[in-house]
Length: 298
Ligand SMILES: [Zn+2]
Ligand SMILES: [Zn+2]
Picture 1 (tube, rainbow, N blue to C red):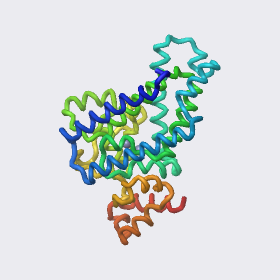
Picture 2 (cartoon, rainbow, N blue to C red):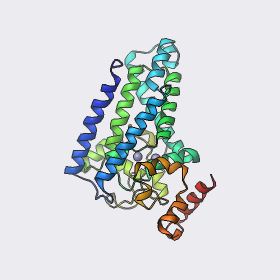
Picture 3 (cartoon, protein in one colour):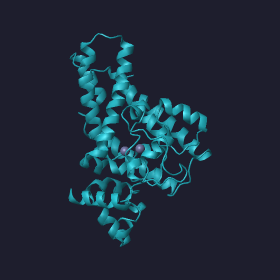
Picture 4 (cartoon, rainbow, N blue to C red):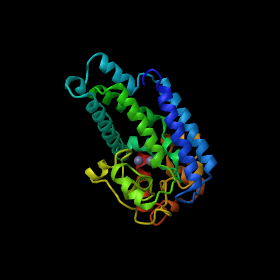
């Protein structure tokens, strides 16, 4: 696996992405509010920027760190003598737990939220949303995984497999696909389904702060952040962030890149000339006003 990691990453990624794009075309779950082609284009462009960002900082590499930890016999799994299959299972499950807590932190630490909101500002949700992360968040996530790989001493191939699974699950659980209800109810016991993750992208703050899992469905149930259904209907659930009501602020790749460095309240004011949209009784209500004010102060 480690001889050609690019092929190991690329082949499942392209296969799952194409499958989801086709599935979304044939059996969509919801009606879109923005142009599909434009959103896909800009989200893919952001993915290219993210790949370049990771190449520019090669010291951040979970697989590379795991290989070093293996060479120097560093990390918990190197110090405890367990069957190799158990090392793999523990590495994949514990890394998924790590990503769950990183995601919780992204919602509750203001500086991390300013970057993570790029992912949440999308007005639609489909497979391409699973790629929509700011480069700073991608680098931070790789830093977390790099440190995790050293502490855990996980097999590097297991870390590579985890990253492939994480990318595949992100494409799946953001996708706009219709799943038969019995299948959806069965799958969500095991893995995060699109209906589960869509609630996390709701414009309602309490719904946004739920269903943080990406792969295994158990973490949200275990830590009390699971939400079975939104208050409204899945088909009409409003997605995005109240402080970003305008697609011009959320879709172009340059707007996504600048989002952490701009104040959404002022942008909204410039775009609409009417702050009442964001205030109490408007799109976001009091939460949006308070949140926007917090961001202005940072
Ligand atoms: Zn989130
Ligand atoms: Zn998401």
